[in-house]
Image (cartoon, rainbow, N blue to C red; front, side, top):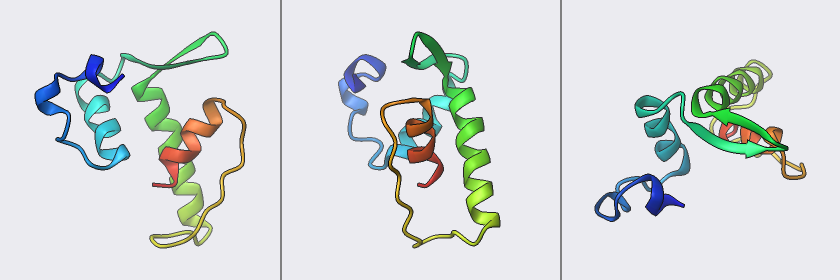
Length: 86
């Protein structure tokens, strides 16, 4: 999948998932990031939801170094939760 999105010479450019994701949001915000349950979700939509979750967690005392458990089936919420807790 990464090979289709970026050429091989850029494959090692990002070492952290959220860095790769943020780069996609910056360059292609309206591109389809995932298709979940037949719904197409853009990078910008996922970023907005992940940021909302991150703010919620921060406002409730969760910060850098905190442990956050995520127990969800494959869904949009699962992807958002992973990115929102990074």
